[in-house]
Image (cartoon, rainbow, N blue to C red; front, side, top):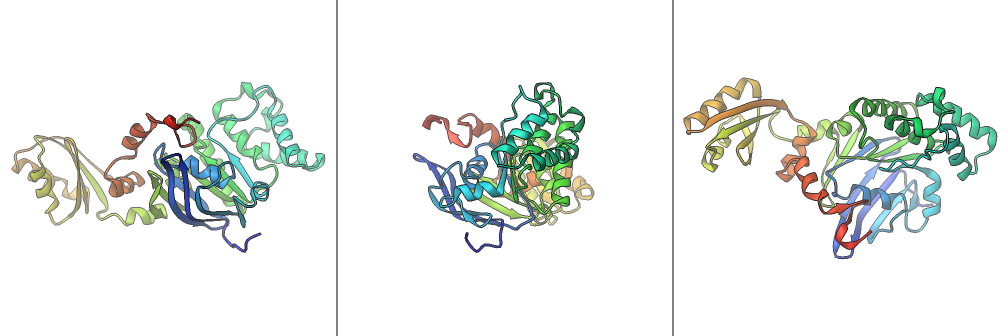
Length: 336
């Protein structure tokens, strides 16, 4: 066992698939008991990273230490300390909720009495005690996800990996899962490592977030800290008829405007006191010959952090990458 007080230590980690680099020399640490999020668009390298940290893929280069063990040298020891909830639902539809839990406990060699006690406790915790005897085929998507979170806690892991845990769930089910995860992080001394492309999810749950794009970490810190690092406390977005580069440049010179991003017929101005200063921007556009088609003001979000560092929205990146990426971060042209 390596002498490491951190739950996770990653140093220069690389993963290649042939000529394509999915994870490109990233480094970070996660404290024990921390709720840490990896945020980025589909295809950014999140799932490839989690597969390396959970010993399913060997790194091409660099090092990852999980619960004090190098993932490449001691994969079996790593697995004893972790629980993993993958993107895909893996609970057996032909078994009951309780049977799913029981089989998982048997895999870890947990004795019968302890297995039953843990199963009862966990099913109660996730709100499935009344449905424990029902086939999982009768569960909703949100219920299945809660069951799968309960299932990976049977052996009392020190570290829980969640790979896009709410993908495909309806908004109500997603919030139920969020509530469960917040309860877990507050009630037990468990470290949670979450990957997601939902900005609200990361902001709601994580104490600290790393934003990844094209296999590289582009920003890291608390959600509040990351937003505070962007100049201006509001984003003023204007759709403008007849928008020109000169017009965008003129707006950027206004004293309360710190930065301007232009996307097709829209200007996003990072500004102080957006609601108060919106009329000034509208007047400036009109004075330059532009026509205001719409205007909005919103407080900065993690989406704005992503735009600040990449110049693109996370939705644009998802649309671009999902067309040629499949599965766990592996380029389709290289096979699975």
